[in-house]
Image (cartoon, one colour):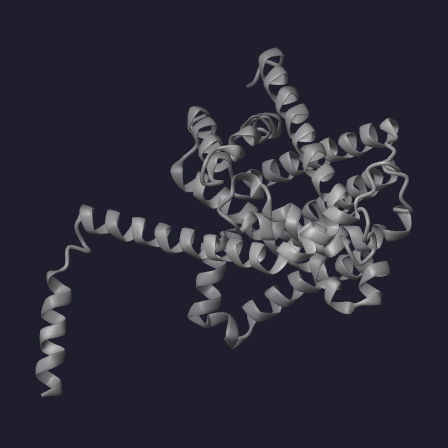
Length: 329
């Protein structure tokens, strides 16, 4: 009886058009739908569990006593733009690590010019826009996929490392960035050690390295890339610190907490289907900042989004103007 059922299941499965073009297209759309539903579910959970805390944060804002120091706002936007420039350079180094012939200048410009596309519906606009610009430069489709996979893997890995000190209570609040800077090389050494053991031959480990594109990058290049992306989180935390100082808050004593808080909020926003993590990032950041700045958490989270957008616009304009004036090879 069991043999007959297995035979029928095989016959039904073999009749499915999975090997055809329509079957593969259906499979791709199925994965996209599942991914979107998972992201939407994460967003719903965030809003559901955070609504009460957001209401308290809104009521705690003292609009009458609020002051703003423009010099710190300009400094925060400048540091934010510097973080974007550093990320653009880091992505150009990913292309070099993947043996791309595209120069550093050209790759940096492509990254900068593609940033405004992230606010298109679905949140994938930045990768679509970047792919179009790369194709115009003659890049292969495999390079486009690999560079995006490596970038996402490095951002999430280093972001997770910098967000990890949040679990260490008081230690993470003061020494978060220092702990993370020690954890990043430890993570690289751990991955390399696992690759050399029998565990490295396990399909799940090999598949993870292959899908992330990290298997194609030498260990020395991987270490330098992790360093660049680590500096990115430090700059983003510094931008948030200066923005808090703009509201006359005692922010520099909380820098060690702002860095992991920013990393955690950014990653949650990245994992939601909203363009640029709009809204989700601010909700998570408000929740995290409440423990150190209870009356200013929501204000600071919203202001950080505005500064983020200003920084993106500044660097995008630089990219478009630079590409028009500099003769690219």
